[in-house]
Length: 303
Image (cartoon, rainbow, N blue to C red; front, top):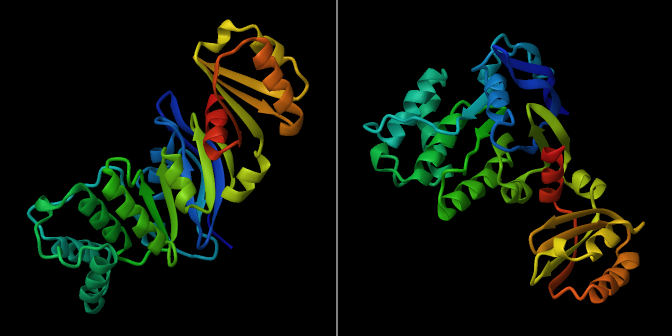
């Protein structure tokens, strides 16, 4: 069942179109990764979904929910959250809860519950000014959850964290996704593959690819042969000869490395080895693999 339906979303700033005709659905209970390079329109899209920006055109709807203000169903953490450093973590959550109209009888219990969930139970009475980057990010996620939203949106939640803080936040997202639908933006593909169900890839304000992670992997599964040489590969005549073979779809050359996309690895492997031997290419590595999410991402954003 679709929790959120987005149709024909457009956002223009003067003569600049930041988001162009974006449409997608988010299934209830799923974790969705919004991928794209810087400037792809990810943050603008999230801000429109959160009600912080008014779309130029298009619609945003929660099917089956009749509400004049959809923000009551949304929790949002911006890429660079702001806090009152003089406040204690517990005070901040209670303050945000009052702004979100959480009933006073429930607010203390909800605050304690969230502090434990995000691993700040022992730090709730400390001032936020003494929190690490990871602790601040976890507190930010807690504030986005204070009113029990149906959809939690996180804009680049781990981009500014060190490896330890990043792992802590990702582990927390794995827990949260069991109870709340999550949409998060990132340009770190490994994070998306680690926790998401579905993927949306944006490029130049448009959706370049979309679907479940499994569907995208299956539909774009393609054998790749990676060759690394001691010398720059364009110097060898074998590259042009390889590109003309019927089992080769594409050859990417970069310095001493070649990535050869083939239709049939069994048909390609032996001839490729023969081409390398005939061209006297000083091979350091000959590796066979399948196209990854990173390969699809790079192909989508180069289109």
